[in-house]
Image (cartoon, rainbow, N blue to C red; front, top):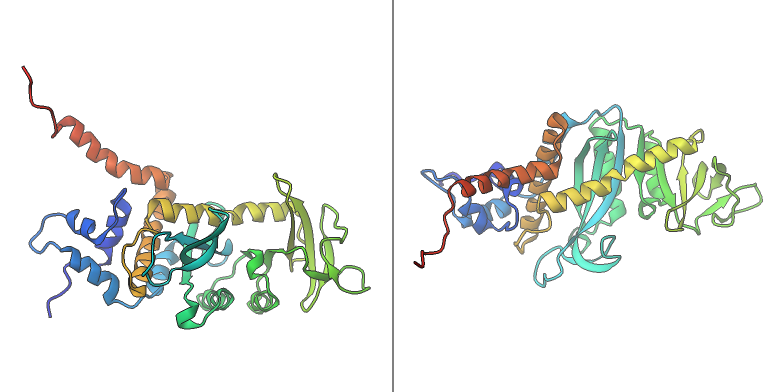
Length: 331
């Protein structure tokens, strides 16, 4: 059997350099001329011949993280697929971008951050019709994997979607602190007189220690967003201050910046393949491409967007020096 004529790095660097078109055909057209230049079929086989494996992502990410400090942030995002009708993994999910339910692929990421670096260490693609796993199952699986890899984060942050008792206890079993948001009807016992929804409970600015039904003592905070929405934050760290909560909230927001980066700089939504393995491998390659942009940013201070624009800028400069297209003289 002949060896493959392209590998994962050929595709990863194509995702970094390409600006608009991200098909296997375009990947083949962009390859440097060599004795055995890959055709588009070679890239199609690359996406489908290997079973998806997140271990390669971790092998590259571990050099960018400090497992004994920082935060672990878990959240999901919807990769838009509005026109897909026969593409695997595409189902209907809530989109924070569109503020409605849309067609797409749901990606769940465990992100490490120290307030500066945004490093995806693990991910899962939601595919319950095939594997039977819910988002909460993926949450706990990634926690267990992070624990086995030796993480000792300062806190684990996640949204109210993942704030079930089973998930809170899973973080507790890892001996980590957590910070999350509660929904307005979450039951707490503030004064020993019985459980009530958290919404009517009086919560001072510095927070209040209450008993969470089915869990134990937690500290809760009440905040108001700039658009007037009331949010309830909770943590198992009973000594947490409001200043610390604000700091953690700001750092945790980095996962939204990460979601924007993988979509705008690494074409994670743009794979034009139908099979599930092809989509999953494209997603993993896009995350590995993002790691390279993160590493470059940490070394040089150059943003992901500027680093990507600089690639095409050189090509534009070369064209302007020697334009190829002109009008025929009319005189």
